[in-house]
Every structure is written in structure tokens, then in C-alpha cells.
Amino acid sequence: MLNQTSNSPSHRADQINRVAALAEVLRGRQIDAVIIDAAEHMRYLFGFSASAVMYQCCIVTADGSVHGIVRKLDEALFASVSWVEDWVAYVDWEDPFDLLIDEIRRLGLAKATIGQELDSNYLTVRDQRRIAAALPDVRFADISGVIVEMRARKSPAEIEEHRRAAAIADLGVAAILDAITKGVSERELVAVGYSAALAAGADNNAPRIVLLGMGSATQHLHCNVGDRRLELGQAVHVELLPQSNGYSSRLMRPAVLGEAPADLLSSVEQLVKIQDRQFAAIRPGVPAKEIDRIGREGLASAGLRASFPHSTGYGIGIITGPKTADFAHLFTPGGEWELQQGMVFHMYLSAGGLQISETICVTDNGVEVLTHTPRRLQIR
Figure (cartoon, rainbow, N blue to C red):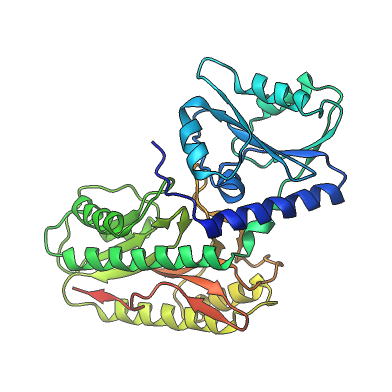
């Protein structure tokens, strides 16, 4: 079952406006229609999270009309959460691509210019070639990146979802910290975090809600939960990734059981200071590479890391499997793109198995930190 809440009026209004903006792009590029099949874009534009097991999509024409191709099993969900009123459904022993091709012909698009999301995880090379072979008079155009850029700036309704998810993350972290005790297992702590997040309203349909590791496993940001049991003096990596109506906020905090070694306290304090300098520099118009430089140079000058082989932050928003983040906007040394009001990011720094992060939103003149758990080494 897909875990999806109802589509609110504000979200529906946003979605209808987004489709109108997409139709304007199509007209500007002289594209007659586009096939939308990336799951996160199906949710973003139409309010429906498509199951990954069988192909589903919507055709958007240049006049703004929408025509869905959905799995019969998901038809009731589509009808209840999406504002789209025109769709056809197929049963599991029918071929969705036959239906898609028939719909393109029915809509008078057999000799049209049709856009495709060639960066979609739901469109394989084999299937794209099959569609093209069945429609030899269609000119296919790549619209990769168009909706990704539309998604970058969040509406007020979207930012409110991120705030809710951030509040759930704070609650989940607090529950885990309260449960830290000698002999507790990773699995037990993860269960506590899941329980708290789900009770608070998390509706994840993609990534795990909790990532956690003890001892040497704190260096594995994406480790599998195990049965390691906590000992005095051991550090714990706690990360919450809850979603609210599909929108993700994330939070990482380090914790230690017992007396904290001075070097751990010092390292976390330095990570916080470096991240504070990053946040102080965030405002619309600033290149991402400048914010990344502050973090990267801060780590090096503090002697915390000789190298940092990944980004210092990344975009988040609607999360639908198989993707677990929006990596179109990364904070890296080569990040030439500029910050804009309404962008939401997960910003993180790490050193020596200690990770600290916040979910932030770019405002008109600075930054709003959406997560509120105190940024310090949590000592239990």
C-alpha cells in the first residue's frame, strides 16, 4: 500500500498552477505535449504517488489538459488524491505502454512533438525506444530538468509541510535520546524513533525514517541497523528523515553515553561554529559554491578533516522512491547555481564519526532553520 495523505486545497491549487506553468514552457518550446512519469513529479504536479512496480504517467498537452494512465489497482487512490479528471486504467495483465501509445493517438498527437523526462527513473531506455518505434512520426524532445527547477523554490504550503516534518524529526530525535542507556541495541533505538515519528504524523513512502549507528558505525552515514549494544563512552549517530505529506526534513545529532571525551566536545563545537558561518552567509543570490567553501575551508583550518569528498548540503522536497533526495542542487566547490528564496536544504558537516545537520529554508534576506533540536553533543 502507498502511504499517502489526502491532497489539501492549497496543494491542489499549487499543482494546478504548476501544470499551467509547465504548459507555458511547452508552448514556448513549441512542444505539443509531454509525458510525465517521474514519480516525484507525478506527486508534485498531480498529487498522486505512483507505485514503482508498474509504469504510470500523465500526458500534459500545451493547452494545459492532463490525461492519466494509471494501474487499475491504484485507480481509487488516484481518484481520491489527484485533481486530474481524465484518465484510463489498465489491469495487471495489460501493457501500460500499449495504453500510452493508444492515448497519444487518441489525443491526435501521433505526428506531434512530445516531450519526455529522459532523466526519469521510471522510464527505461528499452521502454523509451519502444514508444519511439511505435510512433515513428512523433518528434521526441527531452525536457529533463524543467520540473526539477520548478520544484526548487517551495510555495508557502510546501514550506509548511517541511516545518511539520522538521518538528517530527525533533520529536524523533528526542525520543531516541531519552532511550539511550547502557546495553540498548541499535534496533531498539531505531524502533523508538520510528514509533515517535509515526505517532507524530510521519507518512514516509520512500526512505527509512531513522538512520542510526554506534561506535565505529557512526562513520557510516547510511548504515544498516544492527544489533550492536551501547557501551559507556560510545558515540551514537542519530538521524531522522520523516516526511509530512511527502515532504522531507532531516536532522542529524551526535550523542554519547557517559562522560564525553574533551576531543568529542571540541569537535562538535567547531562543527557548529563552521555551520553557523555557513548559515550567516546564506541569502538569495549567493552562489552555492560560496556556502560550500565556508564549510570546506572551516573543516580544513580547524584540523577536523583533510578532505571532504561529498557535498555540504543538498536540496530536499517531495521524496518518492527510488530517489531519496533532490541532488540537482548540491553545495559543492563547483556549485555555480545561486540560492533563491523558498529553497529548502539539508545542510550537514561531519568529522571523526560525528555528524551534525539542520533542515533550512532560504528567506528573503537570510535563512530559517526549520529543525530545533539544540546543536550540540547530546550527553546521556
